[in-house]
Amino acid sequence: MSDQFLWMLGVLAAVAAGLWAWRRWHYRSFWLFIGFPITAISIRASWRKVALGCNLTKKRQRFWFTTVPGLVASTGVVRVRRKWQRIAVDTKPFMWLPLPTRYGWRVTLHTLEGQIPADYADVAERLAHSWGVHAVRVSSDKPGRVRLATTIRDPLVKVDDLPPSTELLKVTVGRLETGGPWVVDFRTVPHYINAGATQSGKSNLANALIVGLAPQPVALVGFDLKGGVEFTPYAPRLSALATTRAECGGLLDDLVALMTDRMGVCRMASARNIWQLPPHLRPVPIVVLVDELAELYLMADKSEKDEIAKTSTALLRIAQLGRAFGIYLFCCGQRIGSDLGPGVTALRAQCSGRICHRVNDPETATMTLGDLDPAALDSARAIAADTPGVAIVASQDGQWYRARSFYVSEQTAEHAAHTYADRAPSWAEVMAAQPHQLPDSQTA
Image (cartoon, rainbow, N blue to C red; front, side, top):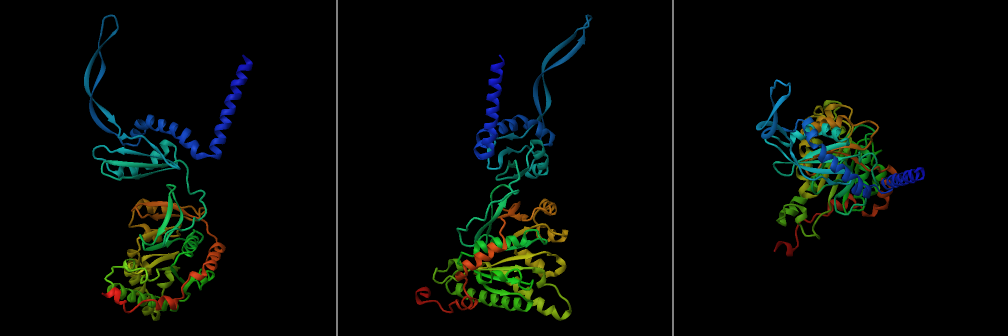
């Protein structure tokens, strides 16, 4: 008997060690075959209690076969009458079968009468604690249905290396909290605001963009009002670089003139944007990287008022009209507030891409994310100082997510700038590349 017990104990220990090694070295298959089935059974079994605790149930009248105590007989025994009666029952939302994901699972629910997705979003934190998971995200793809996307562990703790870009003007710069890629696509979202305090990951995101865009046939233009210390190491890949306010004003004037020339080309070809032009007539796309946006709007005395107004107007014109003519903005800043002037507020309205890292003041977070979702604003203020690269992102699907950019060092970005320096057209070539008259085959 003792030998049999020891043998069973050894088998159990071997199985436990095998499961631990399986989970340690190949977590995906372990999750699909072992972890998820157990989790799915637990979710379905506990859903009624969880829904009741999160106030997601509704009272409904149901006929129920109950036992009702009658009178006490002389013997002291309670006489029981059984009958059907109508009682109020807590009804839970109908839950479909959970489906596994890379970092957790997702499930679709049918909402009850009077419920909306916001009711589920308000209790998302309660759901996460009830199920013992990292986070629960709520979305809705059709009326009457709510999808809960759950992540068991935080996918932003460790992120992978920057993958190479395969499409024009599209760079995968990091990972979303859902485990999906964080993509900056200028063709879909042409202009971005990137706010963040010092050491929050703002410059790292710009480095990731430079590494991703360097191999592509695009012109990179830098506005570096830190005296050039940020973008000068990447000058071999930049077509133009402005490091003072006067240089920024001149470069903005060139961009406005270039945009006007491209308007004429598209008008002659009856095209609404440069992407409708024939390939041999299509001008090179331009990505404008602006560092320390607030420096363009700060005024030391009234003598700078006209210069700032001119600069602000030119930048706003590019934001309003540049998308159709292949000019895209990526504006970075530590401080972005309405106190900088109405030009900043107007520029923000033209920038659909919003990225907010850790900031030092609520005004910057409000300026960046306040008109999207109050919950996004609360999440931005909760970013810890020891998590550089974590940001709140307005995604292309209209929702906001926590995200973290891949770590890209200055040396990596500088190496990419030197490696692909031959793909950087000179600014003179960019300015002179616009035809003022189409060939006869295009005008016929």
